[in-house]
Amino acid sequence: VAAFWCEQAWLGGEDVADGVVLTVTDGQITSVERDVPAAPAGSTRLDGLTLPGFANTHSHSFHRALRGRTHSAGGTFWTWRDRMYELAATLEPDTFEAVAAAAFAEMVAAGYTVVGEFHYLHHRPGGGSYSDRNELGRRLISAAERAGIRVTLLDTCYLRGGFDEPVNEVQSRFSDGAVERWIDRVAELEASGLCRIGTAVHSVRAVDPQSIRVLADWAGQRDSVVHAHVSEQPQENVACIATHGVTPTELLDAAGALGPRFTAVHATHVTASDIERLAATASRCCICPTTERELADGIGATAAWRNAGVEMCVGSDSHAVIDPFEEARAVELDERLASLQRGTHRPHELLTAATRSGYDSLGWPGGGRLAVGALADFVTVGFDSPRLAGTDRQADPLAAVVFAAAPSDIRHVVVGGAVVVDDGVHRRVDVVAELEQSISAAWAAAR
Ligand SMILES: [Zn+2]
Image (cartoon, rainbow, N blue to C red; front, side, top):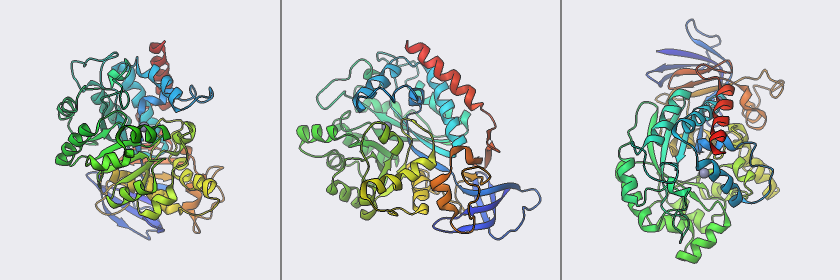
C-alpha cells in the first residue's frame, strides 16, 4: 500500500480539490480522501495539480524518427507517406524497438501513462515473416515495459495497397496476405501486466469489406477494441465512394465494425450522416490535431461530434510533437479558428477527452480517473515554471493547465502505482540519449 498526498487534484468534471490523499493498492486507487491539509507521514508529496494520466490513443512509435525531417519540404500527405516508407522499408527489430522505447519514454515524461500503438509494421523488409511472426509486436511490448508506460497493442490488419491495388514492396511488410492469417498471428499475442492486445483495421483502403467483417466478428468474440483510420483525407472518401458507393464510415458500419469498442481515428472528413452513425453506435473519435495540422489534413468537426454525443479522445499519431496539453487545447483552439466562436469545449471536457475517454477507447475501463477502483495512473503538473507562475490556483487551474502548460511542467508520473518520473526525471531511461542514439541508428540503416 502506498499513499500520495496531492497539493491539488482534479477529481473529474469541474471538481478541483485541495489536499487529496490517494491510497494505492496493487496498482489501483483504493481510497480518495479530501481536505487533508498536509502530507501524512510516509506519504509521497505531490506539489502542484495532480490529474489522471493522459492517454495517447493513437501512436505509430517509429514515426518519432521522422521528426524534423519531413516538415519543410512542401508536398501533401501522400508525399509525406513516401518519406515515412523510406524509414519503414529498413527498420529491423533492434532499431525498431530502440526507437519505440525512446519515444514511449518521451511520452511518459510528457505525462502520457497509456499509449495505443497502432502497429502495422509486422514482417521482414520486403515481406516474409520473422521466425516469431510477432517479433515486432513483442518488441513494442518490451519497449513499453522498459519505458514504464501502459500499452494497448492495436495489431493492425493491412492487406492491400489501395482499393484496387496490391501491396507494394514496402507495404508487403505490413500485410499478412489474408485476414485469416492475420487472426492466426494476432491470436498468439497475450495480455500481460501493463499490456493489452487490441485490433485495428488500417483503413478501408487497406482492408476489403469482407475481411473487415471477419475481423470485427473475431474482435467481438474476444471483446477486443477495434480502431481504424477513417476519412483522414478527402481522397479516401472519393475513392471509397467510387469503388463501393458508400463513405468509409458507412462501409465500416455495414461490415459490423462500429460500436462501443470502436474508435474512428482522425474522422476529419466524415459527413453529417457519418457522425450520426458514429453517435448511434456509441463509437468514439480520436483526433490527432498536431499531426493533422502537420499533414494538412484539415480541422476535425469537433463541435458537430460533441453536439451529436460522440465521445472524443486524442493521440499524437506521427509524433510531430509529443505534448498532451497541445493536443487537448488544439481541439478547442482549432475549433475557434474554424467557427469564429470561443468556448465550444470547456477545459475539463478537453482534459476528459485526453484522459478518461482515451483509457476507455483503449480497453482500460476505469483508467483515466482519480477515483476508488481506478487504475493508479496519474501525473502532477507543477506551477513553478515561467508558463504557469502567477496562476490563480483557486479560480480556474484547469484552464491554466490546458491552455498554457507544456510537457516540461510534468513533475511526477505514476503508472500502476509505481513512480516512473520523479521531479521531471525518468527514473529508468535517459530519454534524450536514447532518442539521439536510436534515431541516428534507424536512419543510418535507411541510407
Ligand atoms: Zn495513424
